[in-house]
Amino acid sequence: EILLWARSRDLPVLVDGAHAPGMLDLNLDELGTLGATFYTGNFHKWCCSPKGAAFLWVNPNWQLPVHPTVVSHGYGAQGDRPTLWSEFDWTGTDEHSAWLCAPEAIDFLGSLLPDGWPGIRKRNLELLTEGAAVVDSVLKTGVKPHPQMQGMLWTFPLEGYPADLGRILWEKAQLDTFVNPCYLGGPPVLRLSAFLYNDISDYEKLAEALKVLR
Image 1 (cartoon, rainbow, N blue to C red):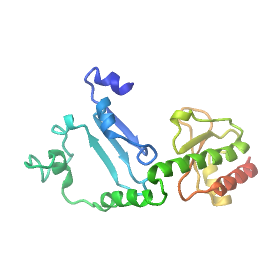
Image 2 (image 1 turned 90 degrees about the vertical axis):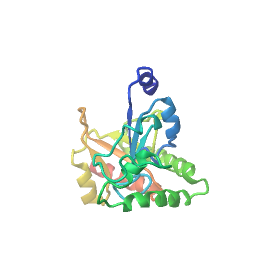
Image 3 (image 1 turned 180 degrees about the horizontal axis):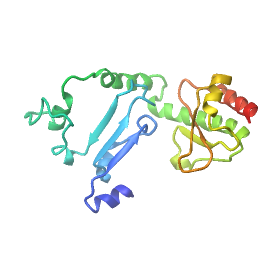
Image 4 (image 1 turned 180 degrees about the vertical axis):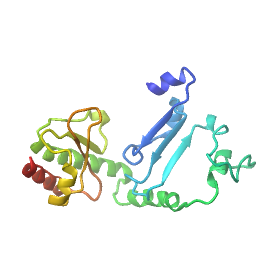
């Protein structure tokens, strides 16, 4: 709805995809048709690429006026390749290893399950749903995301726990869990996620630790 609203007013829109790549089945062409001008995201989370493997997608209608921060080789290049590629491919001395690893990482992960990436997303979502229920049996928040807006992350408010719970969980139980202040006010939050290297025992261990620390 936001994209369609912006398109009707000729407004450019940059979608900050952050860690959506891998978690969602992205269709950038469809987003472009709806009105997205730019889309950026990272491959280092769900796609397990090295950090620094971010990408920028630019709507074909906007590629000519977009330039890198450093103008270098490729500026004004002529030929069959899009000018955008020519300008961004070589902006001086840079380390491209993370970029080169990204497609290999995506292909490798997709080969681990018979259904590829759709199978990965299905498996992770099912595990997260089961694991979140185990953890919330201790927290008793009753928090459940909207079915149409649920990814591979689940956030719980931490009523009655210290703000430095993340450090305590690591020191007491060797659990590396994301605990962060709520910048809108209220208690800190605990963020759960699920991936191929997790199983239900991870969430059971966390639930036991939370029970002891409550």
